[in-house]
Length: 187
Ligand code: SF4
Ligand code: SF4
Image 1 (cartoon, protein in one colour):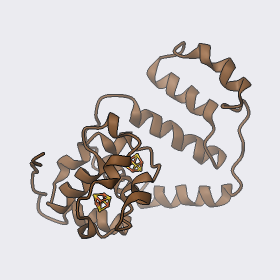
Image 2 (tube, helix red, strand yellow):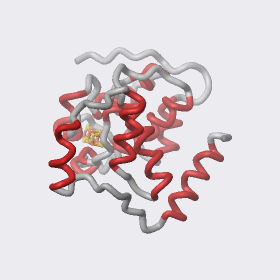
Image 3 (cartoon, protein in one colour):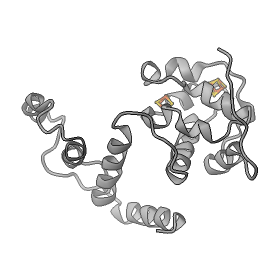
Image 4 (cartoon, helix red, strand yellow):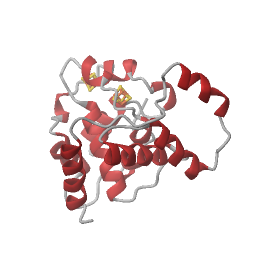
């Protein structure tokens, strides 16, 4: 597939910002596409991870911040594990996600950003993800109160969802990380 890109505007390129944030050398990628063939969300994205890396290599501008994988990536790190060059693609996508928020880039349709926010809120509060609170925040945001409720008893019975939060072991560190991120963002 031919990739068309719009060059970044003046100032620091998205590529250098992403390289700095992720500590990844993007020039190492030789487009073998092993990351994309193993990507757990490849069926749900129009821009597989290898394409994102290629776009960055070619000097993509702010439009890359609107690619759907920024929000569908589950940070499973399969791409990283499969990459023969040891490229941490998940960190690259993390960096793009932060940039997309910072630059208020258009988000693709869907509720993934809301889910992301719900996830982070529970990690901040409990030191690790708390499914029930995440579901609550998500449902409040989407208004889908009754959707999938029939699955709830089975999930509780099979211990897939804990009713009470399991507190993270090192909440102090998690709190400090969130504070540092807030400070960097000038909050
Ligand atoms: S697996 Fe690594 S080298 Fe291959 S395309 Fe993906 S990032 Fe590039
Ligand atoms: S970390 Fe993201 S891009 Fe990499 S394999 Fe997992 S879902 Fe795909």
